[in-house]
Amino acid sequence: MALISVQDLHVNLGQSHVLQGVSFEVPEGGVTALLGRNGVGKTTTLRAMMGLVPRRGSVKLAGAELTRRPTHSIVRRGVGYVPEDRDVFAGLTVAENLRLAERRQKPRYELVYELFPELQARGGQKAGTLSGGQQQMVAIARALLNDNPVLLVDEPTKGLAPLLVTEVAAALERAAELTTVLLVEQNLAVVSRVAQQVVVLDMGRVVHVGSAADLLGDQEKVRSLLGVAGGSH
Amino acid sequence: MYFLIASGLSLIYGLMGVLNFAHGALLTVGAYATWWTSTKIDGSAGTKLLVGAVAGLAVGAVLAALIELVLIRPLYRRPVEQVLVTVGLALALTALVEAIWGFDARPFPVPSWMIDTTSILGASIPNDRFVEIAAAVVVLVGLNAFLRYTRYGLIIRAGVENRAMVTALGIDVRKAFTLVFAIGGALAALAGVLSGVYYGVVDPGRGTSLLIFAFIVVVIGGFGSIGGTAVAAVAVGLVQQYANYYASSGLGDLAVVLLLAIVLLLKPEGLAPKVAH
Image (cartoon, rainbow over all chains, first blue to last red; front, side, top):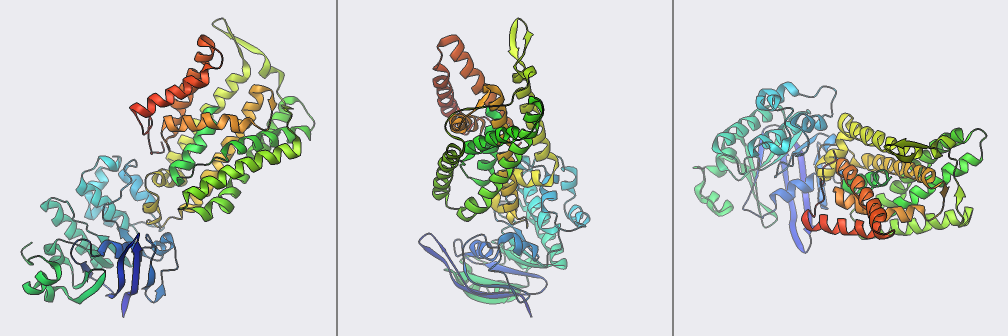
């Protein structure tokens, strides 16, 4: 049974009909990658699922409808969110950023510091003074601090150096052992490493659903669906 | 006094993006609640002032929380309507005070020791000035401690930076909105109490006349910054008084507007923008 079910999701931003009836399902466990060219609605899909933009349609988590809930209530139902631009609180320290995200009696600091030991050492540093990679660690750590059944992660490797991309991919793999991840990602090497399923969007609609290995192993499909050469990224 | 009014305004705008034009009316209501309570109890002027001030602050906080819950909350994401509502509320509350207690100024309960003066370096300074400075320092330290060491303080500081992301961490930021409004209302009422002590009377137009300078302080200090607001409040107060004293009485207001223009030209975002600290 699908853990997340998105049905006929529509989003209008200004005059633009960005999502035009997006429907897909995310199975429990592992990583499902949401792919597509720039501007096809991947980030908007995640934001709509989180209730951060006005939307129509249905988003269900384990059968429970989420679209009538405000964002904070969706998160409390167990949907963690790592936004595209990290959105760490620049004026707060790393420790304060993490403390703000605590929702459970026992936040999983051991897991977070196992994945990102650097964050423990930089607890007193203002998040705004961190590098892009370190800020991404804070953003992922905030979502991992609570045992969310689902994580929505938006382009976690965007703008990162290759070494950091590897580190973030490793963190995603570890996270996927504990929770279900819906990942928006442009880096196909990362997708190939961590994802089992893919959902491809184009022009605000789902145009392909299948296994990650099948899609990324078919150069012609990758070129036609994503507009890039696959496999070698 | 400017700091007390402006700090609430600054937090409310910094966190919620609400320009609260009813803030001055909360000052007036707080001052009148203090005066009215003092007329209903027996005791010395000090007792009347103390008990009245507690009542005034409670009225300010509760009224502000009700305003947020009933009038502001349904209008989030509709800034024009919010401004219209707060302007209308300011007019309505002031008119209500005038309708109940009339246009005439009412004598405020001021203990005699506050009217007495203390000589410092040859200058005779009324003791109420020290009370006002002490109140501002206590509020500054208390607000900073609240923002720095409490969970709600953490939420407010984060919310001033990025409200949407706070909700995306599972936090109902609307509770923080109500709390900030209540704190702002209590601080406005405290400013009303201290302005009553300063002038010796309270009148219906008090809040409106002080509000414009409070907005100037907030713009100079940077929306959402308590430290910036404190520095700006001192700067505005000093510029206003020095201009009135050394140039010509009445030039102080013009000097404050000039100061605002200079800050906006050199540092449009204010002295310490958009971070509650």
